[in-house]
Image 1 (cartoon, rainbow, N blue to C red):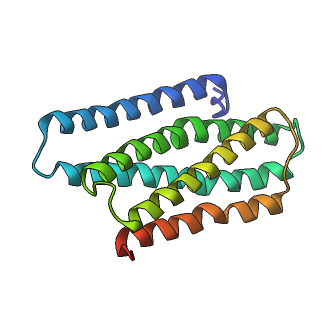
Image 2: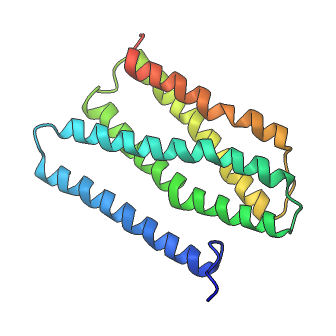
Length: 180
């Protein structure tokens, strides 16, 4: 019996269903906490926010690595087609939902816990906006690779691989140290 390729349409549908189930469970937990309103509700929201951030960052750190290898694959080759599937699934199944949850919970925490006060918070939000711009740039690259459009070099993607890391370092320092 031949095993199904992970790049097949059927495998993609299964991956999509699993992602939607996971997202639904996450939202159900969020709603359950919201209606239960435990005394430590803000801590729960912070924990869920951190989980979403970790998921988003995993995608932002992995996507440029895929682009590096995809840049070296011949357009239309089996390898190129495999990278297209991987990039699409990473973007749609992990990165986009994680980014949206990060933003929703982050803005809630900024409003409820911090009252949008503090220079560190404004700087953090600004850097998260820049991180979102990087995300959008990666999304456009996914579409460009899928359409066999113009490609940036592997060297370019190696340099872009550092952007999410540098932004993450600055954001974590702002959140933990609160320097101003």
